[in-house]
Image (tube, rainbow, N blue to C red; front, side):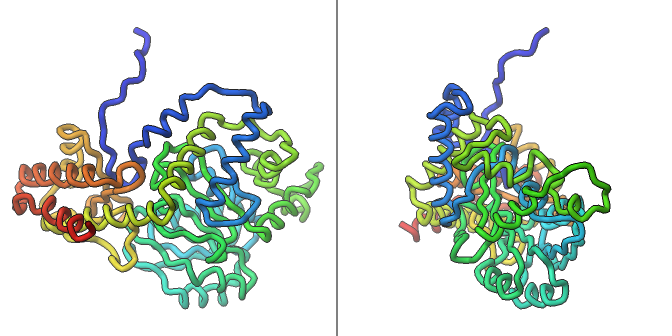
Length: 407
């Protein structure tokens, strides 16, 4: 029997991402395609670049989209900036710092990592001390790591990197649009993100911005002629090993010459453009405040249910709450019951936190009051069925107190 039409079940995605897509984004993505060099297409690309300059808070000309999930943006940045043997420093405070290490190692870089316990962040002095010791070409850092729900402060890192002639790369997949992020003000050279978190879109497009000095590194490597050389040839060593993720070529494709590199993912372009339009219509500061309010309400609600928060609350992301799973409770069984009975998805975590922590997202289209209160009410009912003594309406009343105080 042939497969039927797509008919996904109704879901409220309250995990760490992906999230429920904004209806306007879905509508934009239903628009018809045009040719890759149709004036409408190239104008739309230019408009999207201008929109994301405002989203990233940057004047960088090199602001565009990488076709692929947020990991595609990460890989494009690292494979284009790093040649084999380059030194990289990665401060790890969660699962996605380990991802940066893996990708940088695949680029042939000499990778040095420093660690803090999951749930904590680095003080700038610790990162600067490691830079002095390692003398890297690149500092690669995650802004907000959803595996631990905490955000690494970035404000001082750009000045530190410039003082030591180090490029600063940041993965802002989980934070852009819902947490403060100031690319130029903070001196970040390269930032990559995704649509499926605070920006309220689907996974599949990765916004990226590059400073002038990052572009100079990329273009110098792209311009090297390949020829036929041995692996030990220094010219071949410097050349970007990926074609699809060669940012030098992608920059030429998005630039005024529109040099052909790939066929742009038109439907994702429409979606990314609409994500940025929605954010900028609301105002970035207002969107950050909205994420903070609903994140605080969710945190208060979880505490009202008697659940203990995980991680350093002073550095908590606005858009993801981590709570410890009560002793004797099977965390995945609770998640399954929430999904099957209420259509609500929350997340577990990775590695040492798997089975110990739930992660609840309030981001993008789902950073709103009804989504928070519905999730808290459903979780209260499920916890009670699993034998947890839960204060009646403890979660929703605590959240309502937050909303009342903000009114």
